[in-house]
Length: 249
Image (cartoon, rainbow, N blue to C red; front, side):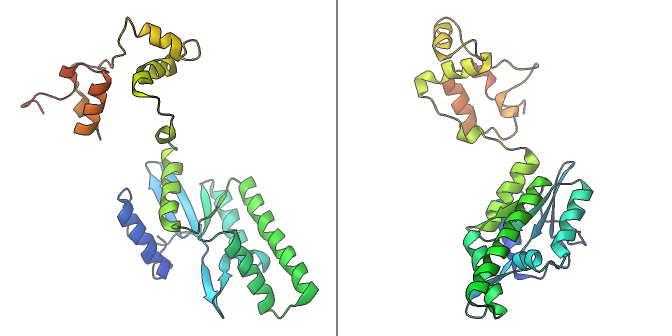
């Protein structure tokens, strides 16, 4: 985390989300070109956070919106710096479209603009924000609008980007009697569908073969008793290949 931003209220919320997630380590503060820097191996991801703040009668103001419509140049320079660094950059806005729209209205009315002129300015500023975001995407810079539980969702997105997303949790779940047939058809490719795979399995087993000698399923990182039981129940390994014998761990 950038040392200049570490005292802001959001820094405490980000730290709390990191500690609760358990899959991130918070490194000592230092000077950074953007608010947050995430690393995983050789991969890096920069995140620039643009907050909403209360103003007047609770109406939101947005540093993000003001940076765009006022053309102060700060956010523009940050986007250019991110593009020139050739490292992934995300602009994270902890709010949704309605908060952006409300901050635009508040900005216009705060300048004393009313009536038809106000309506035209609101349309103009809304279009500027939308075009700015489109151009960011054109430069492979993502803009995240995250209002509900923003910091946890930010970490989910970061982990997916750095770790290369995993859709396995959303895969179809065939009935228990069909799983081996579906699994075999996926392994074989388009030439063998679940029907053919089921006929093959009438005469053959689908078995995980160890890649080397003295290899057991509980040697695999993250595989505990529950995982071993699930694999054993599916019949993918002979019982002797599940758990390393006592005294050989």
